[in-house]
Each structure stands twice: as structure tokens, then as C-alpha cells.
Image 1 (cartoon, rainbow, N blue to C red):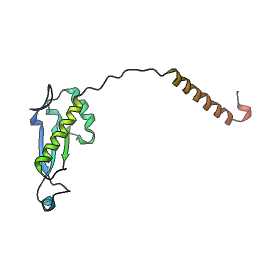
Image 2: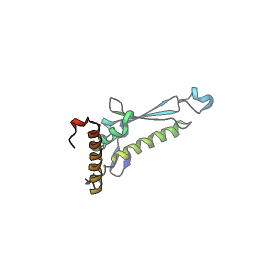
Image 3: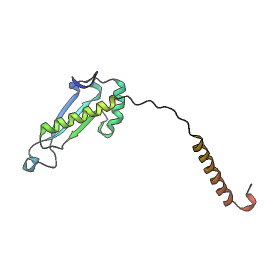
Image 4: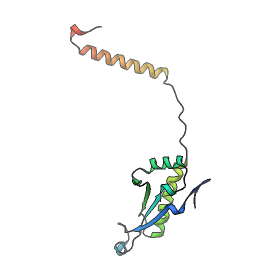
Length: 140
């Protein structure tokens, strides 16, 4: 179990780590050593509550595959260890963000000044359109 936040843990069996070759820094090693990390989280086996999963699916965006797997790639560093830690930290940050419930919306009313401004703009626009009509069609 991977602790995410107080009262929230991630099933470590749902996390898979794969190393792939990375472009970028590495010198001669770049073509020999697979330093980039592809971290996959199977959302169905993650053990997260449904509300967190729903928010996580929205936050994941294009990192979510059709099979409900979240893919996080890390290739900033030259070593597997640092890239693995980077990928895991980014995954945990994403889950923590999804764990926070959205702030409730408090309904507000438009101010009197904004209502009057809107109505004045409507009157001005109506007057412009009226003046564009031929003289016989106007009802002023």
C-alpha cells in the first residue's frame, strides 16, 4: 500500500513501472540504457474511492488510456532512480489533487448596476438595428 494522503492509500499492485529509452541528455548511454520511466496505474485495481476516481479521470486528460489506465512518463533526469521517483511523485500529486473535493458553488445575484448596464446595452443595440431599417418599416 502506498500512502497518498491521510486516510487514502493506493494499492501498490495497481502500479506498474516500465523503463524505456529516452531522448535528450545521456551522452553515449542514451542509445544503450533505458532511463525514461513509464509508470502505469490501473484505476480499476487502485483501491481509490469512486468520487476520487471520477475526479482523477477528469484531471488525467490524455494520460488516461481507453482501458482506464493512467500513464505517467518521466524522462527529465539521466538515471532510472531519479526518473522513477519523479514519476511516482507526479502520480501522487495528481491523486492528491483529485482527493480534494471541489469547493461548493455559492449562488450569487447580478448587481443592480450590472443589470442596468446590460439593459442599456440592449436598448442601444435595438436602436442601432431600428435605424438600419428603411424609414417606412420603423416603429419609433
